[in-house]
Amino acid sequence: MYKPQLNMESLERCVKSLEENENNVRDEAQKALLNICRNVLRSPNDDKTREVRLDDEVVVEKLLPAIGAMECLFDVGYVEDGERLFLPGNVSLSRLQSLSKLLSAVSESKPVTKDIEENSTAQKAFFKKISKDFHNVMHYEDPDLQKKARSVIPIAQLEIAAMTKMRHLQKSYKFSDARKTTSSTQFETELTAKDLLLVELLHWFKHEFFEWVNSPKCSRCSTECVYESVVPSTNHRCSRIELHRCEKCNIIVEFPRYSHPEPLLTLRRGRCGEWANVFTLLCRSLGYDARFIYDETDHVWTEIWSASSKKWIHLDPCENVIDKPLMYEKGWKKKLTYVIAYSKDEVQDVTWRYTQDQEAIMKRRKICTEESLIQFLRSLTDQRQNSSNYSSARKNYVIMRSLLELADMLYIPNLQNKNSNEIYEGRTSGSLAWRLARGEIVQADIEKNYIWDVSKYGKMFELRYNIVKDIYHVVHNDGTILEQKSGWQEGTNITNGGIFRKVENDWKMVYLTRSPQAQYGCIKWIFEIANSELYLETFKLRTKSEVFHGARVSWKIEAIFSDDKVIVIPVSNCNNFYTEDVRKAVKLNIIVTLSGGQGQTAWQHAQVFRQSLENIEEASMIINIQLKNH
Image (tube, rainbow, N blue to C red; front, top):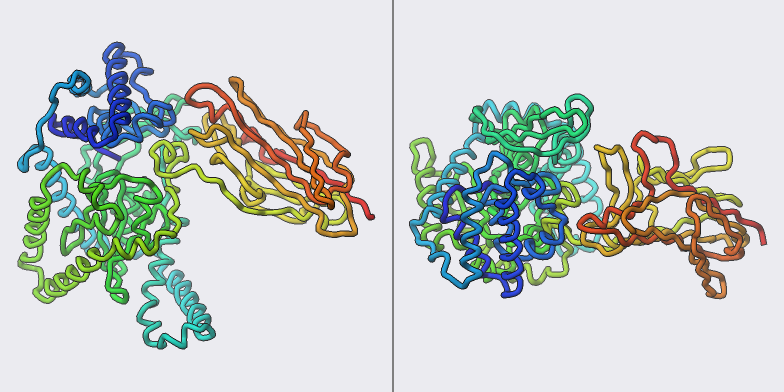
């Protein structure tokens, strides 16, 4: 999470960065920020004025598109709290008053700041943080801690999985055309068992070992709590303690944010900082040359030196992604500034591995001059490598490795342009609304292209979907389950508008809804009769939906016949719908559309399959199709 800085220079820098935007984007952001400031200062004791929803159109349309706008809010003390920004009651309003004055001065066309000098307070704070992070990375070199880390890894299990995959790849290679141009020795060099072990380690860490926490669960009722405030920690291994309140029990649950990896080996939970911290330790404990990567725009991950490829490999444990350095810029739409790598050997600016747009990044790098940054990083590295316990052989090796890295980054932009058709997805960790609001994922039309063949089960087809379990069942008339498919999307043909499954732990409800920013959402299921000896006789639908504040959920059937004739049948009552108008159709498209609603949460006002989490066995949708012989 972005940490607010305590100096005026940083606030002035944030306001000045607004000038990097197009005039209309800048002006809208300045007006929105000024309104937020004035609302709080006008009614400082009203919690509603201190809250800004991340899905609010002010954030989505005016603040997120503007460089520096969100940074202004963070700098005056706003913190992220699930799906909102909130100014805690214990935060002084002095910085908010300063921001208001700076923005007012801008609107009156008065100069509000000066260029940041090389020895500015902002630069000193930036360099101090780099120095501290470079010191902290030495935690990974503690032999006792590495031993403890190895004890939690199922090494034998991962090695077996890696060797099995290696043999499978070798077998596939043996019978492929690649063997004609590549020697077996070259194949072994390019892909080693150690590389495959890393793949298995990453998958295990993501899916079995570590847990993402947006907000901790209540210790009494297990309901997910809501962020309230943050307090300092007296434990030197813990950077701060977040306080979250259970809205049901009204108790406070502490969420310590540990910066030291040892407690996290037992707790096994956190956000990206904790994830990358522990994963980097595990990699070091297995003998990988690993380093901790810190992105100043709010993310962290790991890099591994691949001896076979002679390059640093990007790994993101939160996403289970390997070697996709452009993921943040192209997939998450991040506007990167400084990406710094920390290892036991050196500290490096590796920003250029993670961008295709060096010119844009250079415009955003305002904290210090490039020369002063290079000089500072070089001095820290020299200090580490010239220490008494650092061997000359290791120093020579690291120097050669650094030369290879520099050469690699020189040519990266050209290589990346050649791969510009590669797909980069948005962020998967964290709540969906939070990721959408941050602009780190995009609304996408998802095509599963699945078609249900209703004729392969005989003359009666019954499909049941349970949203609580998120499972489809094809059921025989005696109740026997003929087929099961997990995940609501897996049974669909196509969805629009970023439809997602939302769980409300506070209300104990679950439903499908469209994504924030989407004007409408749509889901289509397709059912066909592949057996030419059968034809469709009747169709029955039983399902449920809820609407609020003028929202709409509408169902319809598109019946397609062998002569390409199509008739559209509106579903008047989805709770109990029956029709014979589909008789002799060969394909049915079942389409539900979500639209309407009011205000900043309009996307949430049209809900499909809304159901209590306690109704575990109740079917959320039942489709019954009767067939007959020709």
